[in-house]
Image (cartoon, rainbow, N blue to C red; front, side, top):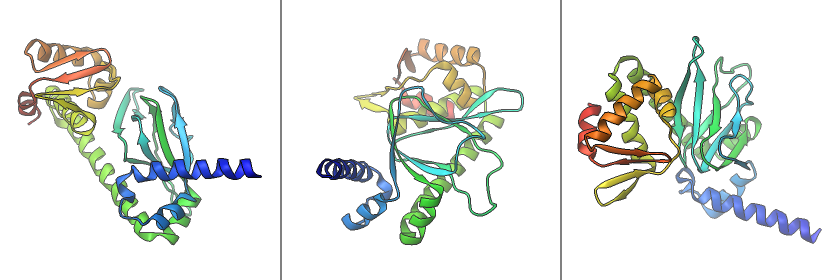
Amino acid sequence: MAKEAFREGQAQNLKLELLRKVHLFEDLSEEELKDALRYMQVRDFRKNEYLFFEEEGEPGVYILVEGLIKLLKETHDARIVIVRLVYPGDIFGWIEWGRKAPRNTYTAKAMLESKTLYISNKDFINLSIKHPAVAIKMTCEATSTLLHSYETLKSIAGGKVEERIAKVLLEIADRIGKKYEDVIVIDAPLTRLDIAEMTGTTVETTIRVMSKWKKQGIINAERGYIEILKRRELEKLAV
């Protein structure tokens, strides 16, 4: 009994520590945080592990605490599009209420070792009843990311290839880039295929564009990381 209580206490402390890292919950008191924890599970995923597959995932909400995750969608012509990248602090997943279920979902895959807090569909509804302010904040955050996804799809449909790739690199730089003097380093395993799938173009086109920028000294791209050397030049291309 003592060992079980100790382990349970350790698990609660871990969840509390993770929850404190998420900006959505920064306004909650200690007691509110501890109560919200009752509805959450810690789920860890290895690099390249799938969290769930399109049309097979169960309803529920994930909050990414550590790592990087990509959300994938297969098109009618069997192409893969990255709908968006999920960064620490972001919410993804979906909730069903009664017969209101989404017709289309997506696949989620971890790009790095990732740690999430998961709330099942049932527990999210219970959390919403007990802590409506938390549910509203999470819903607003989810709405914001959904609108951003619409903007991404709009850009893919109408923007020039160089513009789309520049926008994607700038967004990633703003979210997870580390600045060293005038250089921004994106230390993530982003392949040319990933960037192609995020911008609705081919790998060959992505390689050609990024190789040109590398020769122009705008970026430096190696396996496992990308350096943005001239941000202003990249911003001009994104307009």
